[in-house]
Length: 118
Length: 116
Image (cartoon, rainbow over all chains, first blue to last red):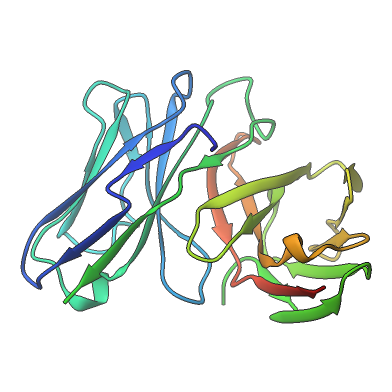
């Protein structure tokens, strides 16, 4: 257990439905990342936050994807109008970041949330 | 192609043998990290090597980094059946200020199978 919690661990949904995943990072970590991993591939970066600020979202796969971290603690990733191609594992990660932490801090991943769109 | 690419894609060895996995990348990095992933599970951090380091050890793991060749290797010595997993290298790029964002770019991974 790395200390990064994700919920739910598994979600099966019908095409067209909306889904939301939650991530609770390690408490003192100010940076939070979302990744997506499809079968046989490495994780792919989606977006990240420093505290409550979303510093990059250009890698979000489409405008159906959105992420929030309203109080700088937990984060949610929402996928609207799901498609079968959205089936994947969605991984959350966290670390300390900012001035003075460059390159020295390990990034810790959660166990992931599996999404199956039927 | 992805920033980090592992070689080989799959490796099958006997318990007690050493396993070597290689990773190549394309652009300047702040650090390179190796992760392990058991089937269907999350990623477990193994080791981080900074761009100014050439070699690092952690238990049975040895990582090397050659920034002139933009490559890294992970050696697992005296492998065990429990080492069976996928192994990924991930690069943490250097930004204009010389620091990193912590946005990792992963390769496709090496699937390691250790037979008892």
